[in-house]
Each structure stands twice: as C-alpha cells, then as structure tokens.
Length: 416
Image (cartoon, rainbow, N blue to C red; front, side, top):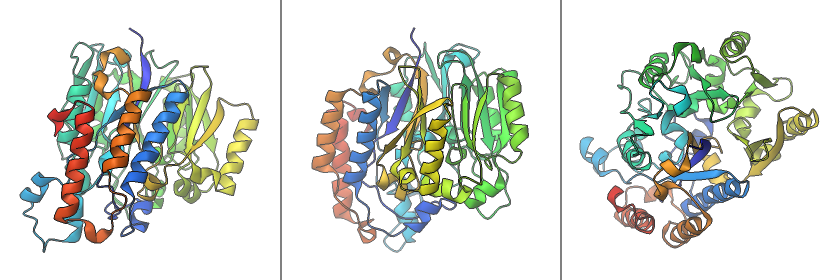
C-alpha cells in the first residue's frame, strides 16, 4: 500500500456570505455585512486545487453541506422575526474550511493500523456546531473502506473540538510513523479558546495513539486575543519542519523541547516578532499556508497573495529562501474571497495520509472532474449575495438547486 498525503479541499458552497458570525476571527468580523461573491470564491478554491495537482500532488475534495439548514431552522423555530445572526447561521458556508472537518491520525500512528478520523464538534460557534453530522456523512462515504479507515462520532459537546486546525504531525515521511501534536487554548481572554485540552486527549485515545507519540501544547493566549482563533493561524507543520511565529505558544521553548523529545529530528523555522509582528502574520495569514512536500522532495509553502502584498511578510519569505533552509519555494495563490471571511489556504484543506486507491474515487480529483465541477459552479452558483438576500425564498431555491446540480455531476445524490 502506497501512503501519500492527500489534501481534501472544501468546495466553496453557493451560500457563501459575509455574516460576521465568528467571534475572534478578525477578518470575518471586519467584513461582516459585505457583499459576497460565491461563484468567484468557488472558482478561486478550485484554482488552488488545480495548482496543487499541477505540482504533482494528490488532491481530493469535500462537498458543501445542505444550506439553508432546514433542521436548524426547525429546531430553533426560526421565523422572519428571528435574530438575523441565527438566520444567517442556517445559511453558513463555513464547512468550506475543511481543516475544521476532522482530526486525522494516519495508519502508521494508530494501534489498529487504520487511518482514524474524528469529526470536529465545533460547539463554540452556533453556525459551525450544526456541521458535524453532515460532515460525517461525507467522511463515511469517502473513507468507507473499514479495512483501512475508522470514522468516529464527534467528541461530546462538553469539550470544544475544532479538528485539524489545532493538530500537527511530525514524521520522517508521510507514510512513516509520526508524532502527533495537539494544541489547545485556555479560557479567560477576550475571545473564546475554541480547542479544549480534554477533547484533544479524547481524540488521541479514540485513535489509539501511543502516549509517548503525543504532545499536548497550550496556544499563546496573546495569539488568541490577537485573532489566532486556531493554531493553524500561527503555526504549520510538515514532516520534520515546524514553521511558526515566535509568539504562537504559551511556552515557546517548552513547546519546542516537548516536540523534540518525542521527535528528535525536529527542524524549527521560527519567524521572529521583530521581522513580522503577530498582528501582521494574522492579517496576511502567513502561517495559514499549505506546507507541502513536492514529488521532488522539496518543501513548498503555498501562501495567500496577501503575503506577497505585505512588505514585511514578503521580505521575510525572500530572506527564508535565501538562507537555504528546509522550505525551498513560496507559492502565492488567490483565495481572496475565502480570506475576507477568515480562511486561508490551510483552512481550505484537510490533510489525510492514505493510499488514494482506498478512498472512494468520487471524492478524488482529476482534471476532467475538476472541469465538470467548474462548469457546474459557473452555471449555477450565485454571482453575488447581499446581506439582505439571506433568508429569501428565491435565494434558497438557487442555493439548493446549485448544490443538487453538483451532487448529480459527481454521482453523490445520496448526500442531497
């Protein structure tokens, strides 16, 4: 069996809108009430997927969830006079950020030799807490081969769990045994700490991970207060490399030492505050990037174009490349529609180490399928959504029919 890293990107849904629902996500809050452009957003995301495939990487996808969510509308008895934020929650397209879909432990790390996936409960935010059952329905199909995968239910909502956005893995190569790092927050700041330590520990137990191959680290409360609502806003890992901001962790040296004790080959690429401030790192999403191993063995960092537009960030990237360190390429991609709602390249993908042959082929992407999806988006996705449109019957009809057209072309009508 040939294990490789597969990036499963979320296809941006036809209800993509800027309702500003995510407390602590500065980009989302600052763009709340703006006009959104779902068609452009989806095509930008698909363009990023094409770029990854052109790099020679395995690429999968997950689908938009059913919106508006009739179940949520029914359960909260939402009528026309309901608070606008609750109505907008039922229309949220935030499942596009599949880094929050689940936590994934590859087969080499687990006691039973299967890849384990636990959907995130996302209980901190109402517009996201509704997602996990529909997400699991997709995971159950995509990873339905029980010889190679185990898909769990979400952790009990007593403890918040935000999935892979607060999880990192270190290994010599993706198909080898690794060390898994779980980053949690503590409550008490001006923004909620969304990842609970006990949910991280429960996921590690569910996945059958060896205790000596797990590290639990506290995120810096200052980073959360500055808008790093997930660890992947200030850190990203790949194989031996941790690419991180100096202020990512509550105890920086303690975090490095703990990871190195479990994984001695660790290489830390740290961006100092003096070069890129925490605020600028969060604004540009330098760390909310895809850190990838290319078929050549080189590592590449896929960053949003906002990094290229920042003098401080781009100067650091050029300096990093000139030092001949482990990251050899920096590749900007345009995901501005996602960025305006608070999600960069890393938010848009869930990393799964597996043999692509064991994944349901309907969830794997190739150029022909990508072109079919692009055609459906171009024909069916709304060009724009204004805030006053949310909740209207006309928009609901458009959004529902657009998703059904996508399911049909992918032969996944069972998810309607």
